[in-house]
Image (cartoon, rainbow, N blue to C red):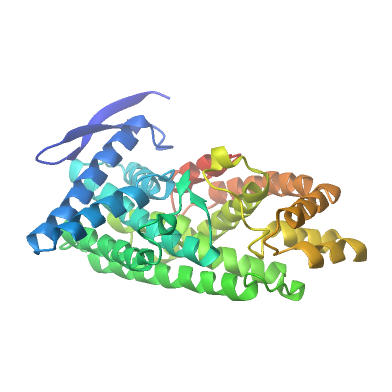
Length: 372
């Protein structure tokens, strides 16, 4: 794809360029460099605000370290999806992306990444996870432990500080704030179902239904991972048609379901060195896609294996479950689902005329056949 470079992110100290692709698909290295430069600016500003507020030195140092440890080390797909979305929408509107709009798109993208960091810090505590993004979970740092709960709250509040600093005064500011509030509530609701459906150490296979699973993944993952970036881009580009948001919601829910089922698959079959964490769904008693599929396929003897071994903090029990997945050929079931779902998503995106395909195409391209 041919590409032309235009300056899109300016600060007093930094001038960076990002690549504007002709088909509005994907975020290249230049986008990521510009995106990281905006993070540096946001992080420095948040720390500076603490200093100006008279925060004690040890707390300033803690906040600086906490932000650096938890926020910028993911794939950044959620944040960069705002950039891709704004570019696709502006192109569909027949407009170029000016520097101020792109800067705001990156700021809002980082607001999503701060929200993601908050969710992960909390989720790791609830799941008693070991690693995240290739490093020990934040709460497992010897000097952190349950202080991580407060750090998570700070991370969430920081996104609103950034949103206020860079977007207050825009016509869409109120809509953006409301959007973040709504999606945070939806995600917490999904997490609640996840936790109470399959609490650690208590196995009740009658709760492991496809209905419960799809509700969990829709609310826990789909809204903040896909709908939030798309809707943020739409707000920044002045889209007001409610039918457009309804269509975006429909597509993003399907994308989120596809993504989370992939995540469940990778938790079991992925390489920890590649995915950046050690899979714990089996030992954590998760109502995951793999175990739901196994329950749909198994006979009475195989169901007994699940009853006796699933959700146990025991490596040997985990091995028995993974062997059962092999016996039931759950991986083949997943591969079939992946291909069928990808084809369905492509068809839905291409058939609808309310929004440009590029708003969602980059998202799908990044997750299809992903290994982490």
